[in-house]
Image (cartoon, rainbow, N blue to C red; front, side):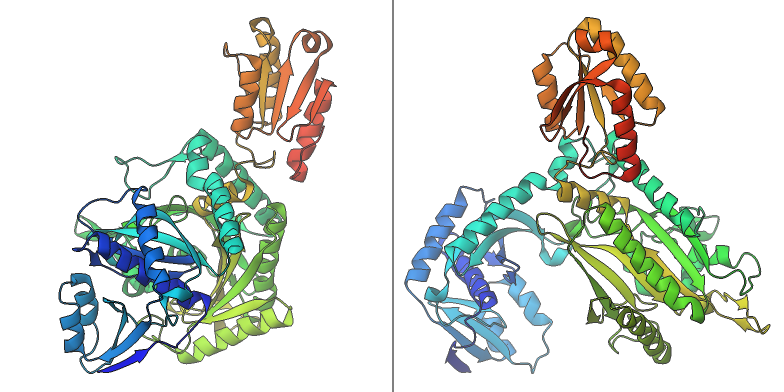
Length: 589
């Protein structure tokens, strides 16, 4: 056994990792029978998973934090021990989760144990030199976490902490998190009546409420209008299909863990579809194709179902039912660059519409690993296709980061990472190249020379799914959608009951132009109605009383605080129509 005083790292990640170990020691001092899961450094801090004799509450966090401060003040050195597997098992004898991790390590591999004081933990490191090197931290929250993300395993208690080198950095982070909590799409979605989950329906299966339905309709309309101009044709495919389709596509051996289990009827096994592509390939193959027909661009807002683990579900961001902005482009090799770049340009057009300024492209390759297991086993086509994508994005000066071993099983892909206004990063759009499916489905077209050739297939989803996009936009806009997208664009507020008929007449005229509007005719006071509309992020309120009724005008109050009295109603209609057509960010009258 080799023991060293740790002199490995003084960086921020090592400090955060060390803080997790100090937190574990503090928890053990309070709960001597605690069982430990894992405790890594993460972006902005750390966490540790515990099995404890009772449920923790927020009141426990200051107590644990005080114990941590006491350990930090002692400046205990982090000592590393290199031990054999048997010795590691002896040290971790009362820790079943650590023993499980040890079982997965080969017998002759050297294992590292880190000590601070009388606390020992199974860990690869690195750590700071001593506990005194941990600067500023704050324990932020408690959450449940299944052991190893498996809903069939025990639910542990996870304590999160933030850690930084300066108090200012910590304070800035806490402020950002407070803003993030206000913008959390789960909170806003509930308050604005966008979506709901129900135990009788099942986890990860959202119910879209009327306001959410309005968002979906508006986003689909946008996509359909743009895709129509770009030569896409719309198709529809079933929600279930025979097992043989996914055997032919290759999804079953590579993707089975993410699919719902099959159902059997009349001796035939069926799967609920996790993606649209095999059915689109069948549509392409439904009739002979010539080079004159290409490119063929098939588009569908198809609903798909994927079995995400319960521990990985997260509001609208990770769900089991999703409506995907899906399309498959079938083109010749000579058309590939133009088609691939047209998809990337489509991303940029959408980003401008949705005020997305921060994004970057991830070019995911196979990385020469997992062929035949994780990826289709065809090295020559992998390298050829990856070179094609790399050449296109380089020649068009598209900034990108290349990430090995994250490709789709059938080919390389570009994922677009975006950031919301609160700094949360999402994978929103994808642009994938497929060299395998044309062969599997015997897709072909007749070339100009009369020879049968295989098309190149591009899978693209520039607006991801309704679920992920709307979750992102809720946080991005903080619920204050631009007026063209807002679930309710205008609330009409009659001052008294005698003004209700006039308000309802305005409502009818606004609905005739396709506006989403409602009349608030409740008996509440006018100021209370205005405040409620503002709390619901309604962009525009029309207050109508005697003056407005007599002159066919409205008093306009905008979400921004702007107010204009005595506006001719037809002028308001014109301004609203133009804002909707132009996708105006800030509505003015």
